[in-house]
Image (cartoon, rainbow over all chains, first blue to last red; front, side, top):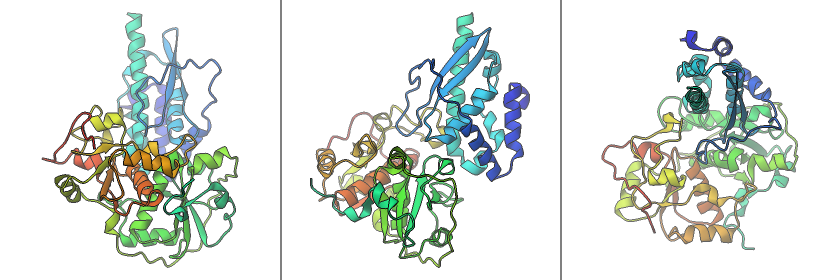
Length: 145
Length: 285
C-alpha cells in the first residue's frame, strides 16, 4: 500500500507508524507547530466545501507548476489537530503530480495509527482534506486534457 | 438587563483570572480539538477529553460511576471542589463535561463565559506546563436520570406531542446531509429529524465573541419557537455534544425546570430500525 504513496508522504506515514502512543500526538503537534503563516498572495479559493458549523473551516489553495501540484492551507490556530493534518499533506504532497495524488488510497492515514490515540472520529478531518486535494488533482487532469 | 436564571453557574474570564491559585477551584479545559490543550492552556488547568476521558472505552456510553470517581480523583477534584469548565468552539465540549459532572452529582460547577477563545482574545496567560494535583477520594452519586433522555423517552415524547429541539445545522435537520462531508464515521443510515422537532441551531445562543446572548435574546429565541418553560423538553444533535450546550442554556440561563439531553442523538435515531423520521422543513411549532 505504501508503494502507492508519493515518497515524502510515505516517509511521513512511516515516521508516525514507528511512534508509540503519546509520541504520535507529539509528532502531530510538531507538524501543527510548523504550520506556516498564510502567504500574502493566498488565493482564497472560497470556502470550497460547504463547511458545516461543527467542522473546522479549512480553505485550500492549489498551485500547478510544470504539471506538479502544491497546496497551501488556511486553518485556524485553535484547530491544531487539523493544522497537523494539513501540514502532513502540504509537506507530503509538495510538487506531486495529479496522477500520484489520485493514486493515494483514501484511507492511507490509517497506517499512521493515529486512530489508536485520537479515536477514529477525529481522523475525519484528514479524510476530508485528502478528498479535497484529490478533487483538485482531478480538475488539474481534466484541464490538461 | 434581566439576569440569567442561575448566574452562579456562569463566570467571566476575570473571575477565573482571580482564582488561578485558589485550592478550592479546579479549572478544567475540554476541547473538540485533541491537541489544543497541549499548545497552551490556562495556568493550572487540567484537561478532560470528550472522547478519550469522558466516554466508556468500549461500549457507547459515558464513564461508569467508578470510572468517573477515578477520573476526578486523578485530577485532584474533591466532592466540594468548584469545577470551572472552559473550552474551544464557544464552550461546546466544556458544557458536555459540565453535563456529565451534573449527571454524577457534582454540585459546584461553573462554565467560563466566552470559553477559551475569549481568554486568548483578552491576552490572558497561557502555559504548556501540565499541572498535577494530589489524588482525592472522590465519591460520585448515582446517575441523575432527570437530565438524560434515552430513545424510549424520545418515542414517548413524540407520542405525547412534547417539544424536541434539534440543535443541528439546517441541512442536517432537513435531511439534505446525512453526515458531514468526509465525516463518514459520524453518519447515520437515514437523514432528517425526529418528527415534530424544531430546528434551533445551538450556536444561535451565543454572540460573535462566544459569550452567551442576553436573557432577553435567549428567551425570544426559544419561546418564539414554542420551546417554553412550562414544557418538558428534550434536546438532541448528532452525538449529544451540541445539544448539551442548548441544555445548559435552557436549564441554567433561562431556568427551564425540565430539560433533558438525548445523547444518543441522530447517530442513534437515524440508524434505528423502524424509528419515525420527518424530512424537509417540517416541525413548525
